[in-house]
Length: 215
Image (cartoon, rainbow, N blue to C red; front, side):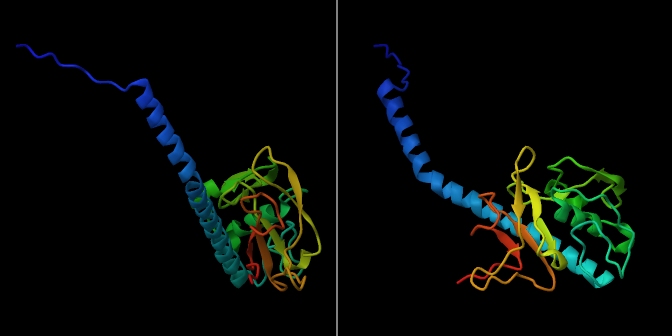
């Protein structure tokens, strides 16, 4: 007797069951995946902030003052960093400019090219030596928004930052204050502020230096 072989395939009912199971798994796993991605972005932003802190500390140790946030040399310590200021991202652009100026013991950020952006598309008259580029770049957080950088002498001044990367909108940023006392953080030093995942400055998910006090 000759036996015939029969190829088995999925029936419509079986396909519906499989699709249903996959859908249930996707719904169940989405929150966990979102939390993992969020934690990764937080960690990446903290790493970038720590790298900037190290560079700023080095700069201050070699020059005796913190990098300006407005492209203006300190009157008592001119070091030849000049650029035309503008109204958007000026704090972080000034910081990058000063940190990457060769003759003042600059910091090479070329190993972190993926951190650099030019969300407002502006240019400088001369190339930044250690970056060899004329565009006025910023260091952005993991969500694509440039950090806000405040020198302590300008805590009372507001800044404009283009959040969310290229094509985003410009928002007003103020120096961070203690949530209970209302006193500015880092009174005698500087501030670095990331808007966090919600792209809103001044909210609970901001990542800052000095760190925002927690209860």
